[in-house]
Image (cartoon, rainbow, N blue to C red; front, side, top):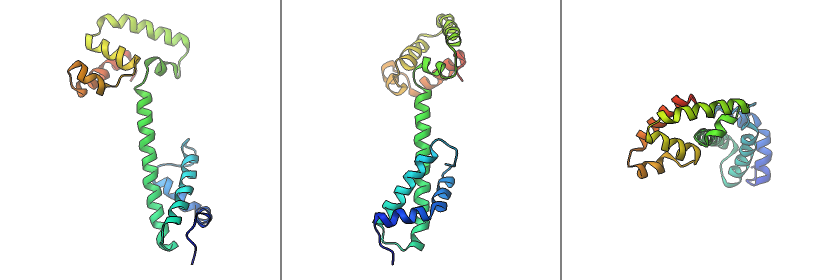
Length: 165
């Protein structure tokens, strides 16, 4: 019988690298993605810790840990997606500066200055408080006495006008 401790768990994790990589692949994390190395290390730790706390035989343990790693991989994906959404919704000049030259940024800001007189009062508030100050639409909605859904629609329209989408 194999002992259930961390050292044995790490040894088994290294012996079952294909199982771990297969679980990550099932969770849509594959070699070449930026998150892969971190996810692989986390999966080794998860394997070893789970082995140390379980009383299952190896034959029963491997399907169990496979599914647990898949769930963790899906959680990592959700966290990445949420992080990308936060970055996407953040400060407007940062969005523009990612892959743009200074000249492009200046041209864009000149276009924004020309667009400002055409914007509604609500769109100006979204531009100033949401894009520039980073206030979430959820926090803006009660202040403006409108629904969050309506603000999202206005933001989408504003982005379309600014050609950010």
